[in-house]
Image (tube, rainbow, N blue to C red):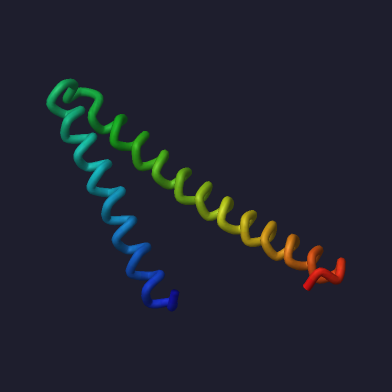
Length: 78
């Protein structure tokens, strides 16, 4: 996957998550308009936390794969 393809996927993923947050906040607005701003803030904070967690999982899995490849190479299997 090239860098430009990755950026396009990241752009669409971010827009999709913002659309879901917008939809949830609009539905919440209909039922409880007084707490809508706090609800939206909590959704946006959760979205940021989720993004950083996904990035950390990606970094860890990359490290794990590289470590396994290194172990296999050092053992003489490959």
